[in-house]
Image (cartoon, rainbow, N blue to C red; front, top):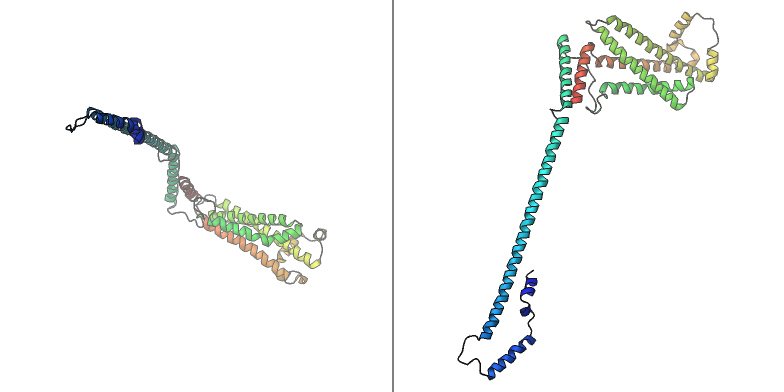
Length: 347
């Protein structure tokens, strides 16, 4: 910047060369011949004073232009600073407004003053009040076990109880799959699916039997007779299912012993027999005992009986866990479950 201003105001001095001194040399020689100025004169001549004044004027112009350039730069810097601060302030204000708007929207939709929060809070308060009423009525907290979720609120249905029942259902698959495949002549995949369905049926029977036993044992129950009847019906259905599976495994044992195909064995078994149905049923029940079967079956009869006991153990284990999971008072348990569900929704 200072170079450009110097080139603008001090051009004749910047570009001054020896050639430019020729006129002054000639003027000096001429003045010397005329003996001008006189030797006794010690000051500057008018010509020299003019040269000095011209140089001072050029230097003043350079200084003035340089000052004007600096003033212009200061003005631009001031303007840019103001513009920057103004833009920063305006952008900051816009961001603050945006943040406040987002906070207001969040409070209206998710905060304690939102409709959704008030609705959930009202639901929780109502559920807690209902549970406290049932707890006050019975004078005790609910007796429920194995109800804690394994993974917190992410999977509330996956509790210790449901995991145990699922394990029991899966345990039933290898017990029943071979009998289903050989007797019903299903494929490997279909037989596993049917075996899994049988296992789920087993644990559902155990689940509902435990609930009905709990309800029937509650002395204040108004439907005790219905609970007893339901318990007997569920128990009979479970026993029939266990007996059918036992007979299917017995057919597998006899098929292996006789070497017949499944169709031939069913045709032979379906032949009419002149036996009283009551005595036939009694004989079938006696055949469950391993030492009461045909001698040619050998140890296979004991294996068949062991699998029957395993079915009974699975069913009994599921029933015991069901009894421990559910409270005898249905209303108290429902109040507790309602409070748990409302608190999960709030969280």
